[in-house]
Image 1 (cartoon, rainbow, N blue to C red):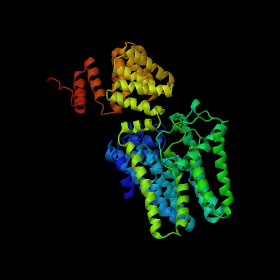
Image 2 (cartoon, rainbow, N blue to C red):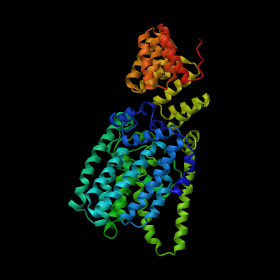
Image 3 (cartoon, one colour):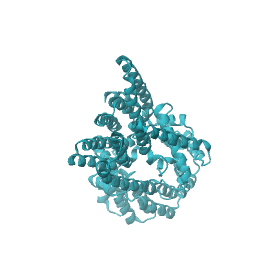
Image 4 (cartoon, rainbow, N blue to C red):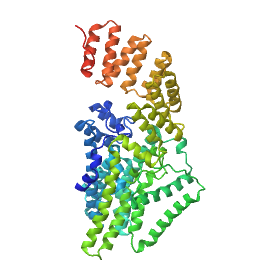
Length: 563
C-alpha cells in the first residue's frame, strides 16, 4: 500500500478531468431522494451502475467537490485489489502471489484506472470481483453454504459496480479446470450456473443502456461480423504488447481503420488462434498457459468489438479496459518467473525483482503526472495523438473559459477537421461566437449542433438563448420547451425558459418555470433573482423582496435593497 501511494503521489495532487463530472454526484442527486433515483431511475446517472454511484454519493457527503478525497479513494482501492489478489492466489495455491500483486499494483497500464476519478468503476468493482473469487475459493475447499452466499453477495456487488465483472463465473470455471484438470457437473458447474444467469442479464442490460442512453449506436458502430472478428484479434495483441512493453501509453490511442480484406488484420487473428492452439497443445504438460490465455481473452470479451462500447468513437483500445484482464497474463508471468528463479541465489532474485518493480513504479509515477492538471492532461494527449479530436474540443473549452479565444477557436476547428460531424464542436463554436456577441453566428452553430444531436437538452437550451438575443422569441421558446422535455431535472433549462417566457409577457408561466428551477436547485441565485423580478412585475412586492434576500444570501455580491 505504501508503494502504491508513493507511485501515485502526482495523482493525489490532481484535479478532475474530462468526464469526472458525470460521476461525482451532481446537485440533483445529492439528496436522499437523489440516492433513490440512482437506484431506480435508469438514465439519472452516466451508466446504470447503482452501487458505484451510491459510493460516489457517499464520498460527496464526505468531501464534496474536493478532488483529493476521490483520488485517494481510487489509490487505496487499487492497493486493496493488489492485496486481495495476493490473498486469492495464495488461496488458489498459485506460485508468485506477492510478486504478481506488486506487478499489478505498480504496472503503468493501471494508471488510467487509478488516476482517473471516473474509473472508480474499475477499482471498486475489482475489489468486489477479487473478494468474490477469494470467497468462492474458500467455498470450493469447505463446501460451506454460508461461504457460497457470501461469494454470491460479493459477486452481485461487483455487477452493480461495473458489469464487465460478469466474466467472473467463466473465469472461475477456468481456475477450477486448471486446479482439477476437468470440470465436474455437481462440484464445479452447477454452483456457478446462477451466477451465469445473473451475469447474462446484467451484461445484456448494460449493453442496452450503452446503446440507448449513452449513444453506442449508429454508423460509427456499424461493423460487419468479419470486421469485428478482425478487430478482436488486433485488440488482443495490442493489450499483450502494452503489458510486456508499457511505454508510449496514450490516454486516447489513434483509432484504427478496420478493413476486412487487410492482410495485417488477418495476421493478428491468425496469431491469436495460433497462440491458443499452442497453449492447448501444452495442456498435458502444464495447464497454466491455456488457463491464463482463456482468462485474459475471456475477460476482454466485453471490449473486443463484439459489443458496442461508446468509447469506440475515440479509439478501439484504452488502458483502463484491460485493468481486470491484465491479471491473467501478469499472474502467468509472475508464477513462471517465481518457479524459474528458484535456481538462482536469493540475492540475485531480490535484485531482479526490485529492479523490475522499481522500473514499473517509475513508469507509473511518470504516467500519473499527466493528471496533475486538466490543461496538461489534454496537451499530453495531443502531443501523443494530434488527431484526438476529443482533446482538441475539450482543450478549446478550457481555453475559452480562460479568455484565450483565438487558440480556443483553433482547437474547435481542429475538432471539426478530424470529426466533421461533431455536434459538440459546433456547440462550442456557437458558445465562442456568443462570448464575442456574434449572435447570428452563434445561432448558426447551435442550429447545426441541434441538427446533428437533436436529443441533447443543452444544445436546445443554447440555441434558445441565442435566438432570444436576436429577437426570435417564439422560436426560442420552442427550443426551451424541448430542452425541458429532454431533461426535466435540469434547473438551468427551466430558469432560461422562464427568462424567455417573461420576455414574451407570459408572466405566470415564467413564474412557474423559475419556481421549478429553484425547487430543483435551492442554491441557484439566478433562479431566486428571477423569481424576485417576476413577482415584482406581477405586483407582489413582499414575495419579490423575500426572494431577492434569498438571492443575496446565495450571492452576497448583489446590492442590498433600500429600506
